[in-house]
Image (cartoon, rainbow, N blue to C red; front, side, top):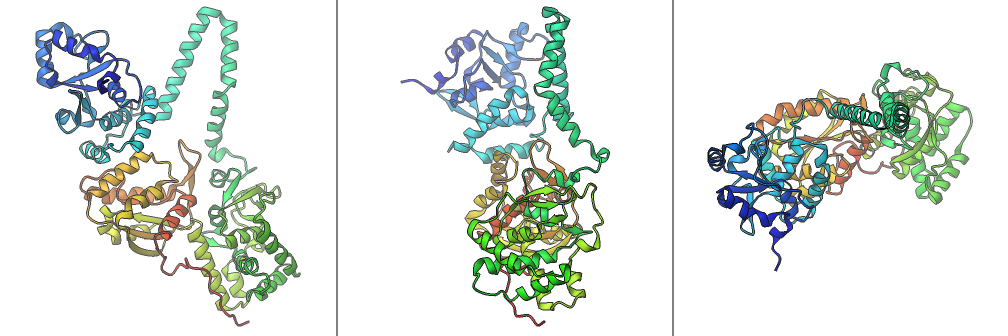
Length: 558
């Protein structure tokens, strides 16, 4: 019957080679690509060994010619080599022959989890395919030990920082690209001459790198941008459509929401869509608002819109028109429809009439809370619109949901106070998740760009603490700045990024066995906040006074 060891290329040479050099197999741990081979992930190119320090010293004393320059691998043959450093960058070599290795067919192999962490630490481009294969294997394997990875990270807190260079990855890749281009051009020049070299180089450049560079330069224009398109903060949130949460956020001026007219429309539309035979109690105030704003009635159009949405849903062929900084130019009724039916994305187009960012919009386009107060609308109506706004902010991810994980829960009050320095505190509560904690954490991070294996390491770390209760801080950060994410087609709030950094900097040192990050989490943008809200609501969480229940149907006095 075939053995597991037979999956490793050149394994038949191991015993003979060790015997020739007088190396005891008990002093040997197999590392590197052979670990992937024994798990069936790929074929190894050679066999790398790590020796106990005393055995290595004895070998080099008896065979000094093997030492060479005192650096690099020690060749025992064409296909078998000794690694001097092993997993020194992970601080695990002292226990490599005990808790961080396993026996396969009589031979000691380093644990596959350790090899995975090493590849992440070294961060070589040639290891990318191995890293992807290892990550997929981790999720499907029943024996993968996330707790072991967590224990390694406790030994080496910077284990996930690439050791190759202090330069940012993009800078290193740029140097590598330049070197490759130069070396290729020199080789081509020698073989084909100047004309053919120039022609092939230009063709290669046009095929891809020039476009990538153009995109990179576009993102770096910043203050050099001419005011001919959307502002950078909004443009990086827009692809084919814009999230309703981002659109709501853009209707603020100096942090104050200026489209209470849209909220009133949404209340009326919700009732008309649900039951067209009934006359909404708020329809009277809608007609009054339209008369005061436009000196005409639009109730027939409103009823027709509600009927259309009820029958066909929102039609993406009719986008909302917005100004370059995201203010509504046309489409308040369509945004109101989105709020009424709980849609989360809308197609948008930028208004050609607005060619410059309108950071101080004209008074005629602002219909904030004060517009209704100053015209004597009932307090009950305004209170309903307030509740509708809070509900929309919560349900569309405008509010940041700061999750305080179990290891940091004892400092919930202190973290809440810190959050208050970045915005308005809406609600603070706790939720006991019990055995559902792991699934909840996975669900929260499902829309994040964090690698799945890092989530599993976080969970392994949390299991080492008592309790499965989490803290929930609902925070309204009224004015936020956004930037595109470095390696993903998404965006994040720089303001909230600063909050997370501040809280983690204070709390992380108090958590025994801390790994990044088991203290707090909050979404980078509205879509991530929305994911957290959904995960919480599905587990019975209800926000305090922010109106997560449906809008009440009140009776208003004119």
